[in-house]
Image (tube, rainbow, N blue to C red):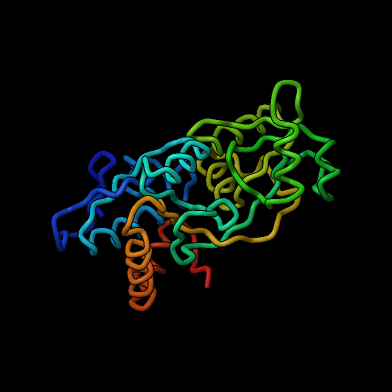
Length: 250
């Protein structure tokens, strides 16, 4: 795939191009830096699918809570890496991955997640806008985020990197995020051996979620499904995932 700035056009368009605005916060290996030759496997997959349908993909970083607001009201066209829990009212693609959120602590920490009550024992780092369980954990985060609270919510477009840094510097005691993302960030920083998991939540499927304000959102989601099925059949999906150290989730 050719990357020029943040405008991605993988193949010649079959019709006059319509630019599809894809947004998310940094969540590598799913979506990485827009200017990177490897911008994330979901970005690559989306660019191929959209190009085959006559569109171009414009991928940029944006804080997650803002991205969810803007896709809901049509200011952007889609968000990358959404779970069903946080996509109500949006048009979901077929699953494009599977992951689960895990708590991470420093290697010497004795804390482990033993249920929502155990969160009272730590200063927890999260990313603002993420939905983890649509239940007691999300309720705890909402209730304790803010000055003097026991939750520190990053509102950056590179929240995972920021939270790993806070954890390693001892600014928070634990962080909660995608296991694959945190392991990727820590490995890239050369500090993977300094953190460990301290409990994980139930796995969730990951999707690209399109704006309900676009009349062709169902068609765009169908284009993604066709592209993924074709790539799975010819082996190119496995090759793409391997480039990011991943394997097929099915």
